[in-house]
Every structure is written in structure tokens, then in C-alpha cells.
Image (cartoon, rainbow, N blue to C red; front, top):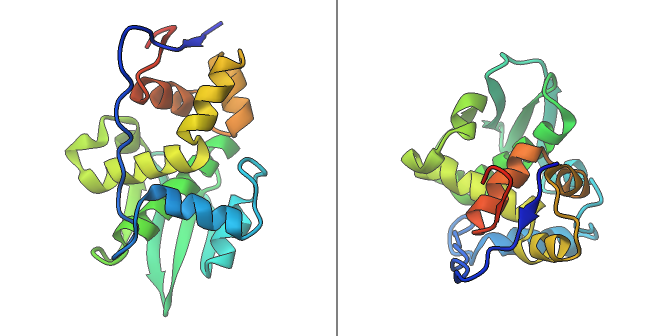
Length: 184
């Protein structure tokens, strides 16, 4: 069983913040908006949140290596999700595309996300790296993630089930937060 442990004898890394759109503060602003709209942390209503923002959400079969996209549509936006991917992967993709919406929609016409690229070290493309960071913080807030680990919910499977994401997303989040464990 894979387990995440709090790393000792090493200070935690400072929380990296990113701007949301033009003139906004950081990624927690979207989380605050999510909560203000009446959604709880892990109630699974990311789809309704997207729709309340006026973004059309479509699920459709795509090439296996494509996870999703964010495109302009008329005077609004559409987020597309690969319906062939696991529901947890789809959830992360929705949050990733929301990251592009909040962070980058003012500077690019569209984003098409390749699954293989998002799994790799996305630091080579700042927009993809920021969208991944946004999605991780949105779905697995740092303090809540640390609290679950401290409570003993520290296997990758337990954390993935709790947060509704893949074990790979949990693994990357733990590593990003400076935690150690099986294979990190």
C-alpha cells in the first residue's frame, strides 16, 4: 500500500500563487467563488460550477492522448472533456481547463490539452504548469490535503477517493507539497 508521510526536518515550500485573469489575486479566489456559490469542497459539483460561470461543458470522445480543451464559443466559452477518460481524470481536466479560463483566457484564443503533456513536467510551458497548479489547489487545497494526511488518510488510494482525483494527481500534489512516501 502506498502511503504519504509528512516530511520532517525540512521547511515546507512557500505556497505559489498565480493571478486569475486580469487584476485578480490568486488561485484561492476561484475556490472562494466556488464556496460563495454554495458548493462545498468535495461535493462533486464542479460541472454545475462551470455552468453557473456561463461556460458550456461538453463531454465527447476524443483521441486517447487528448484530455480536454477550452475554446471561445460565440460570446462565451466551452470546456470539452474526453468522455473516454476515467471520471477522476475528467474531474481534474475540468479543473485544469478552469485554470486556463481564470488565468489565461485573456491571452490565448484556445487551449487544447494533450494528456501526455500534462503528465510530464509542465514547467517547460508556464501556462500548462499554472493550470495544473490551479487544478491541484482547487481540488486538493493544501491545508485540507495536509489535514487528511495528518488524520491517517494517507494512502494514495484513500486520498484519491476523498478528493475525487487520480492517484497520480495525489502523488504529484504530495510531492509538490514536499511530502515523502512510497515512491516519492
